[in-house]
Length: 442
Image 1 (cartoon, rainbow, N blue to C red):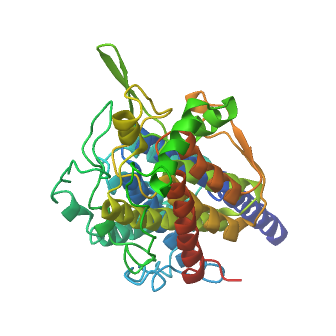
Image 2 (image 1 turned 45 degrees about the vertical axis):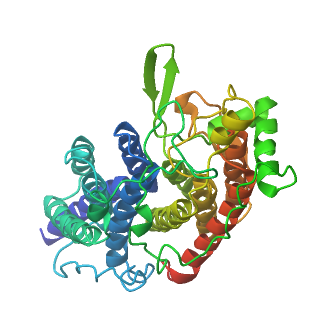
């Protein structure tokens, strides 16, 4: 009889262990985190959020997810509390309860990503699907309840912290005043939209001490009377390139366009089209790096968190420089002085030219991803396939960032110097993020 009871207990233990392993195979799969980030990316696109605001959603959501991972595995991951000097200590998980920290990180990501800017409920259906997935995989009810409770605790703590970053104050800040002076930015066709987020440089950064910590050189002075001036040559360079674009150059411009909302005007008809923002594009690229390197769940979350921090700070720094310089776009100069019928290849976005946002944020993200996954990581980027744009192959993250910068010149919306300086600026920001943050414990 005793032997029978032992065999029965062993069978029950084996069954329980298998069920545990079954649900962890689902909830600990890094592909599930990559899918969840993509879900937020889709919602950012659907809600037509500008790139700077999108970066705020990504950064708080990924930090929430990462803080859960660090709380559950302090042997391998270091909390961002203290590394980001204004981030309070994360609420500790209860010691007497079993928590699936990977699943909790997914739920925290969704909670914060849904609530930072969006109307509540944007990710509710997806969260319900995640919860059902965990239950179907055999997660015990007590573990499920403990996990949901802890994820909510961390998410609320991150949400409270996010409310102190000066975002709310910028919603009611003064609008940009257009000055029709040579060399100054003015709205461009076809939208003639007002300046986008002129106070974004006032948002609290994560790693930078301030928006102005990494200074950019002044742009070349406006000068269209001296054909030997840097500015005049820069204008002519853009015009010449756009007037003779190759198929490859057009593909680059289209691939990195990442216009959150493009207005197309045909006669009296107008319609808008949407794509991922530049930050959303680099979230996808972070996913490629994680997949190629076969990173585990925690390492994947750490890479997304660090990349989103670099993107967030890069946008803040870039927007500070943009509205300090207030430089005129090529389209404005060329149509006024050289050819009134001239058209850019891609649509000019509604904010000052110098420096290139794509160049800054791409270089910052590339530095972090190179630090996390290594240099010369070749990959194929199919992010734009859903918009009918063919994939592109890259030999490294840095090579992709360089192409992203140059694509803006081919698009006709930036001078090359703004892209070169932007790339240098972004690289410095990425290097600073790598230096100040140590997420993985070696």
